[in-house]
Amino acid sequence: MIQNTNRHTSRFSLLSFETVSNENEDLISTIGYQEVAPQQDYPVRVIPQRYGFNMDRGRRLAEYQIVYITGGTGVIEDSDGSKVITPGTLILLRPGYWHSYHPNRDIGWTEYYIGFNGPTFRSDVRRFFGDRKGPVELGLSATLVDLFEQALFYAERQCSQTMPMLQAIVIHMLSLINYNLATKNRNDDRVVTAINAVKQHMANHLSEQIDIQALAAGMGMSYTWLRRMFKKNTGMAPAQYLQQLRIHSSMYFLRNTTLPVKNVALDCGFSTPEYFSAAFQESVGMSPGAYRAAHTEKDHAAD
Image (cartoon, rainbow, N blue to C red):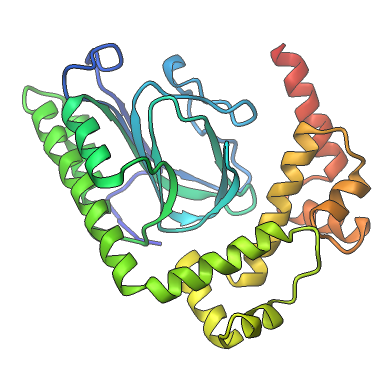
C-alpha cells in the first residue's frame, strides 16, 4: 500500500458547478479519498443523492469516474459477474454502466476517486480506452496517487483556478493510465496472459475442486513461479484469490436466489456445508443464513 502521511482518513469535495446536466463543458464534479477500516460500513459517508450508491442494488452514473484502490481488497459486480479487487486496481466507471463495489469487510481498503464529464474527456476516454470499462489491474503508481493528491488540494481550495487545474490533472491522469497500461501489457504480456488464464479457469470451474499445482503444471509453468507472479499482480496467493472468489460468489447467490445454503456451498466449490459456513463466518463476520436474512430485510425495507 502506498503511504502518504499528509492524508486524512476521509476527504471529499463535491464541486459546486453544474456538472451533471451540462455535457458541453469539461467539468469535474467530485473528488475524494477514504480509508475504510475493517468492519466499517461502506460507504463511510453520506453519498449525494445524484450518485445513488447502494451496494445491494448497484447504480448507474451520469458521468465518468475513476476509482483507484491503493490498499485492501474487495469486490465489484457488473453485468459480466463478480471480480475481486486488489491493491492497484483501477475502476473506470462510464455513464450508464451498471455496477456495485465494496471492500472486504474484514480487511477494508483505501480508495481515491474523481468524477468528470465533457467533450474533451469523452474523446480522451474513447481514444485511450475504447469501450473498456470496469476494473483493470494497473498496479500501484506513486505518480497517479500524487495527481489525486494535487486534485484534492485544488478542490479543497475552490477558487477561480480550481476548475482549470482539475481539468489539466484529469487529462494528465487519463494519459498516464493509458501509458501505464500499455507499458504493463508490453512488459508483462506472458505474466498477464498466464494469470488471466488461471483466473478464467477458476471462474469457469468454481464448483469443482481445483488443484492449483496441477493447474500450473498443465499450463506449462511451475507452481512457485505462478504463485510469485500471481501474488505480485493481485496482492494474493492463488489459493487466497480462489477462496475470495468463492466467498463473493456465494454472497451473490445468498442475496439473489433462494437456493438452500447447502446448495450454495457446493455450487461455489466448498467441500462441505460446514467448511463453507466456517469460511463465510471468518470472511464476512456472520453466518450465511444471517447474511441472507440481513439482506432480505434490507430489500423489504427498501420496497
